[in-house]
Image (tube, rainbow, N blue to C red; front, side):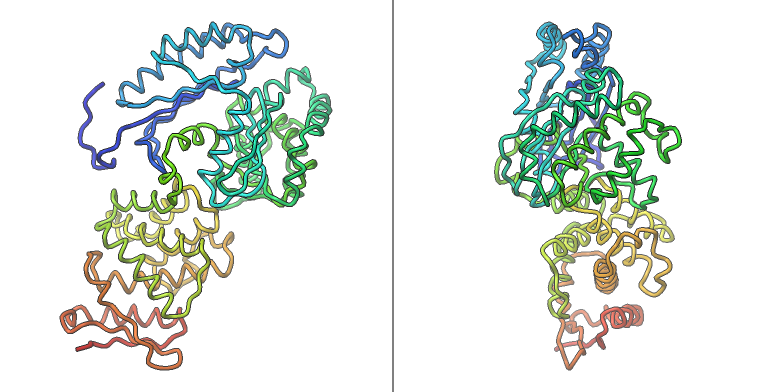
Length: 506
């Protein structure tokens, strides 16, 4: 291993960990900064080997695919060593598990990787896929479906509890071979298999969580086709009827004219119709309330399963926001004080919050100063882009909008709403107003504190009449009052609907 520099862009005291996922369609290496609740990805590489091709007909992995996979594993082992990975978790799924030459392949792979490979059973695949959903969503409730190259896993999830899942031979590679490349035949096979999936009966009116690369690419195409402004597939939601119409178009197989198809690899494009067929039959059988796509699946679930229970229970959004504050804010302590002060301020002004809105406000405060190094003219848009498109989990798209817009308003100001970006089109009126309110309180706090800790606890609110409020400062902080803070207070008055003044208390 090459000794690394003391990089300031990484959190200190963390030992990198990695996961190698030997799947039926691809072999992937993901290296993480550490084994924590919300791990940051240091390196991510995939090789589309297609180990599952041909198994349906020959019961063997193709020799060329095996050779390509082994070559990839040589490189992956070297990369893990280069990064200094302490723990490397290696899992293999349907192809290695079921092929006649699977044991021979695994033996060679273990020699290359210098450690054992965990060959997952179908039930284990379902279990770890469910753990991936549990790790990435707050209080999930529904059926998780993980579509790979060789199999489809289905499991019922309620909060942090997952039932015993099932595995079915409906992976996109295997389905194509079973159907001999005929879409109508694939539909018949899938319909028959899904009919036996009684687990879907428990999902009626609940959420279907779609996991796997093929389904994520379908989500990307839907985002592009609808001009949806937030190009984030994780937690992207679609109503069943709308998605069924879109899937019908994909099933026809003429994908070249689809908006955004250039972002889908050629090897993946051929699999999309089979993914659409499987998702269609799942939706028809289950009748979910909505379909939610997830970027978190088996790999993330396997890593999550290595954590102790206390760490698993931590809020992944809050953890990630706090870490980013450590890396990029002028004062992480100030960011935490801002979260406390805005909670206090919301209560004093009678601004009610749901549990999730409180989480989003806390995260927005922790992230409020990450753009300070940017040019002043671009801090608003840069912060918005980082926060709207950040690799956060346990947050839906409304939450992303709240966090991003509140920080946009914190920099850009509250007067000209036309300055707000297209993200406005996906927010509810309530989220829009909450983000402006929070942005207004942030603008006041930063002028009184200069982004440094130790001041905010002295900024106290005193109600002086009906819809009248006074911000009081101790005599020791009198010099912080002035024309600029008064201007921010005036802006806050307009957005809150309260008459606000400033006073020095003895």
